[in-house]
Each structure stands twice: as C-alpha cells, then as structure tokens.
Length: 235
Image (cartoon, rainbow, N blue to C red; front, side, top):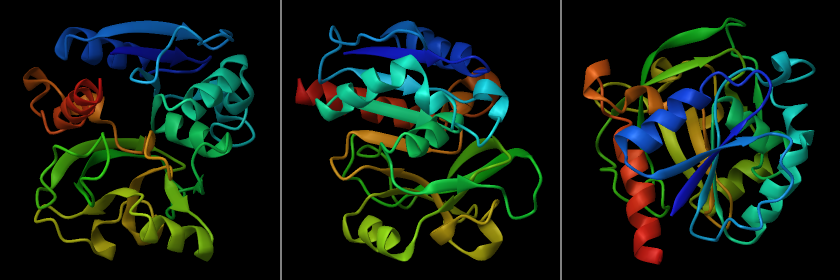
C-alpha cells in the first residue's frame, strides 16, 4: 500500500500528513501536486489523502475551487476504481464539493472559527477507517475550522443512517452524544462519513494532529492503523 497526499494552493496540513504517514506509521507516501492529472499507477489498495488547510483561500466556499483542480478528476476516477480516498477538514469539504461524498459543510452555528480539542466516537466498525476502533471509546481529536457544520437533506441523511455511512459523531468525554458535545451544529453530531461503497472517507477533526506521544495525544493514530491493517488484509 502507498499513500499520496494532494497539495493544493493553500493546503497547510500536507506536511503534517506526510510526516505522520511516512515517519510515524512507516508507510510509503508521496506528495501529489494539484496539477497532476494521471493516477493510473495508483492501485485499488492505495490511498489518496486530501489534507486540511485553506485551499484557494476558501474563496466562494471552502473546497469549491479545489474541487475543480486538475487532479480531482483523476481522484474521482481512482475512487470509482475502488481506491481509498481520505479527506480531512478542508479535504472533507473538497470531497463534498466534488460529489464524492453527499452533503455539505456549512458555517459553524456560532459563525466563528473553532480551534480546540473535541471528543468523537466511531459509530460503525464496517469501514477500513474505523474497523479497529472501539465504538465505546471517546477519542480526543482537535478541530480547526470555520465551515464544519455537516448538513444534508432529509432523504440523504436517512440514507446515511440506513447504509451505516456515518463514521464518527461528536460526543462528550464519556461518549455521550448530545447537543452540548456538538461543537459546530452538525446534523446528528456528524463528524465524519463515508460513501456507499465504503472507500471514500471524510471527517472534520484532524487525527494527524493526535498521532504522536510528543504531542501529548495519540488518539488519532488508531485511524491510520485501522486503514493500514484493513488494506493489508485486503491485499
């Protein structure tokens, strides 16, 4: 398995992601400039990561312009071939804007940029990203966004629930999902989802910022461990 981290103009978490995947998780990882148009040498068991940041300065809507970057058609084709795609924060916004994931990320209910540690829990083990996570455990993961409020129409939300596509929900330290533990007003406290084929993942919290002991938090590491383990099994 190899990883590719896409760099858009305005990405600011690409170096963090390259470090965690390569140096912490000891995986093969490559930087992919957004003007690259050919991913034919990337296989079904590989993973393309869309990192956090402020692609194109968040003009129009967060992720809107980046969704039309040259590489995105190749990413879409890669996902349609069964390859894994993982978007974090701005990457999640780009996945929704490009149609790889349903719904949208709207402005936080308080209309402010929020940067703090929050708690979230996995709501399913039926995905490569969450298969190794204890569903009863609340993970402490940082968020840093102004447009992180997940929204979808009623039919879409019902489909997400029916198909078990909700990966993470915001919760409190004890794992309780309630209004008080929802940092941005997301519907159903949704912090992350996957597509119907379960190979495209998006989440607002930043697991790469919680994957090393030197940072005082390794709760995010299990997501990368899960993804690597499942893809190795699949291979």
